[in-house]
Image (cartoon, rainbow, N blue to C red; front, side):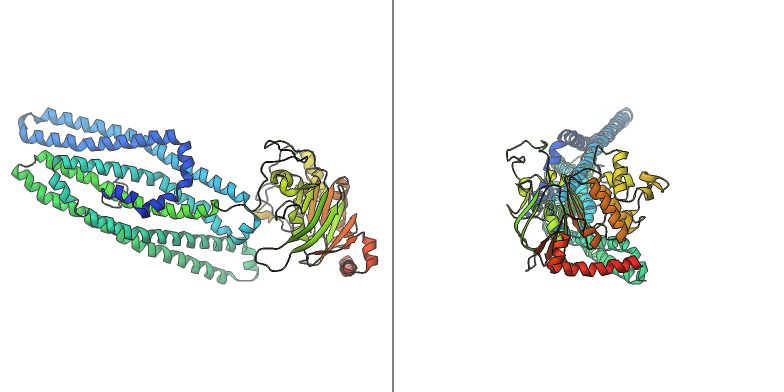
Amino acid sequence: MGLSALYNNTMNPRDAAKQIFSSPFAAMLKNFQPLGTYFVQNRWPLSVGLLSLLLVDFLLLLIPLVIKKAIDLLVTQPPETGPLLLQQGMIIVSIALMIALFRYVWRRLILGHSRKVEQGLRNRMYGHLQTLPISFFQKMKTGDLMARAINDINGVRMASGMGLVALIDGTVLGIAAIGFMMSIDLKLTLICLIPAPVVIILTKILTRRMSTGFEAVQRTFSDLTERVREAFAGIRVVKAHNRETWEYTKIKEQGERYVAENMNLAKTLALFFPMMTLFTNAGLAIVILLGGRYAILGNITPGDFVAFISYLNLLTWPMMAMGWVTNLIQRGSASMRRINHILEEVPDIRDPAPLQDFAGGAIPEGTILKPVMGEIEIKDLSLKYPGQAGYALKGIHLKINASETVALVGRVGSGKTTLLQTLPRVLDVQENTVFLDRRDIRQIPLKTLRGKIGFVSQEVFLFSDTIRNNVIFGRRGIDDQDLEKALRAAGILEEIQDLEKGLDTMLGERGITLSGGQRQRLTIARAIVQPLPILILDDALSMVDTRTEEEILNQILNLRHNKTNLIVSHRVSTISRADRIVVLDRGELVEEGSHDSLIALGGVYAALYEEQRLVEELELED
């Protein structure tokens, strides 16, 4: 009957409306507000599904009436009941067939709707994450994000699918069943519902405890996911240092904390559902005791008595459904609250409004901007990292002409990477401090700005995909000739051609099947496969030897002789190839000029140059 054969959670049916509109339940439902757009988008399939669900409930409510008539026929017309009972049996079979049909429809449409909610929410969350700054990912664990994108969204899917079904089905079927019971005998119905106030009070208490428990479980699951992710990502380091037992112990302890939180939640659930069963079955005992007496005394017919019990049995599912829907919506609400924390994060770095072209005029979104020449100018740029007292950059003034190659030099922590990351606004800057072609970069759409800059960072990252796809990186209009040209300039074409599948060779996780130098050169090819106006190489050849770096850099600069190039390196051969050298020290620009002029100056650059020259001589001797 209904969904009662599938789920065994309980709650008094008359509590449904009261529980839904009580303040704790209303607070839970508020967390689901961001899902409203998906309900609007799927309104027609959802409406048909809900209509089919209501038709199933209506048909279920007809069956006790058919049984009542059959029982009364047996009592009043025994000799003539054969054909009439057959007729009632055929009616029940017909109703059952219609129930099966409409149940298929609502399961297909409503559960299909929940999958669309899952898809839309996951896409929305991932799309929003793409807009958030690097600082957000530095404070948020990857495992936590994975847990929210998988486990939490699954909880929301269950709430928007079966939770919605149980809520509506239980409420409608419960209220309707009570109405039919009242039509048979009002007094008997009211006596059956005596346990309802107790159920409502206990439900309020336990649902609060469940909400806290679900939140703790999800949080612990996030920590466990992050711990496992780190263990697998760092498995080579773990093995190299013989720390398998230590790593296993950490995973085991985190797993035990997760189980402990689940057990605390299970205690609440274990108390909740038996309590509901106890109070609801008390009503059945009352019906058998009093209803049977009424039937014997002739206050109600035997058919009424059997129909009353049938409606009470139908009422069992709404009682269970309300307990189950409380469980689902509590879990989904806790999950949705965690997802909302992500969706409510405001990107620190945003596009200007309205979009403007390089001439300063407003343009419609999607319009192609005029070509970028590559002139960069920095005026009095100062920058602090959050939580740090000192400046990462302080009072930087620098102008880089279009088609100029500039090397940035300085000791570790001098601000080179920080300065380069301000150009594509990976790190944001104040207005009127960084300009591209005499235009404040804060007034340039991020997609346009970053689409004009090729950036190779110190951190090498390749995807578990083919070499071809890692270099193309989803961009269109790049053919094999362009690929080979970029790979040749990056000094890795011959090595790729020697592979069995060439460009179509699959790489392992993070490109682990390649050496460090090969991975670096592939990321360089990715950056230069398109002739972008600006190229930034942030110590991008640190994993290759000095001679290889010099050869690769010569090829890149020959390929990009009419483009702007910014290079960070610690090697003399690389630095000396630049048109101009900029020296940073403790976040300040301290020296600027050609290689010879800086050597003659005898300052910071001269000291760095001498150190690196000795290192390179030792490398060449080796």
